Image (cartoon, rainbow, N blue to C red; front, side, top):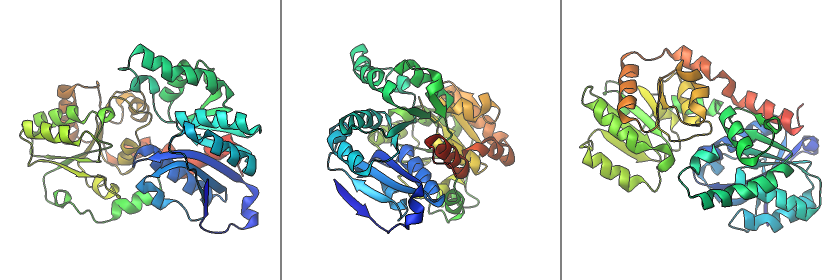
Length: 380
């Protein structure tokens, strides 16, 4: 176990302390939301230990200097149980906030091994049943059985949406009342500052054709093939371009599909962007084409910036954020023709910016952090 303390913390700031256990494995929304949450807690005067299995994420560059970073030597969450147990015995935090399912199960085992009474709260951000839908019955059983054995020992589960809460209760076979829904800390001062920064891509300059934007890891969950096929239909009727921000293993397949559809000159995939908001704020339309989500952060960010949106009606976040389609069209998952129609309609008559911004007011960093602190027992 390797400890790193960047800045000494005034003893008066240690009145409220939180330990967080996580594993960062990329540039995804979970990692970014956890950093937003930690930043907000530090701003509220909470001292934070961030205990990590893996630290592979550019978002860690935004970690506040006051945070005490604890790097475990294990490279897999479940293999970290003995080290986490030693940390818990040494530090004896009153509460441990854990991000993601596997880390939550590891935390329960580590607490048992440590023999202490630290409260464990686990934050869950995806509808697991949707992610497992195409797996074999054996694969699902192997994933669900440990959840059903260990989740009853978690003191409180925090879900990012009602859909995630209901899905978790069904899978874990626990009472829905044991799960609290807290919206993600999506809307931050950094979002607006990033949106105002210059955008490096020439397609988003004034006077250029409208750009339809999507963002996320290039992987099955985001279903970008459906988006590309839908865009091909839109492009046949309207002069516009498509830009997909993000990186991932599906890039070769997506590039092949773009070529197959003869869209090379009007589709760009510029990779991961440290400041996606400079792109997002200049888009004519944001489209979420996912097969499943917990609570899609980038959809919320687009709305916070006043950008009109279209989304698939996937489990479970978009329908909640868009109030069943009130603030933007909802389209069946995998329906390229329906997605194309919705995109054309929204380009022709976009939802007013003030309307979409008002729809996501509860996703501010300050409101989310306040709810977390109350549930964690660390409220002022």
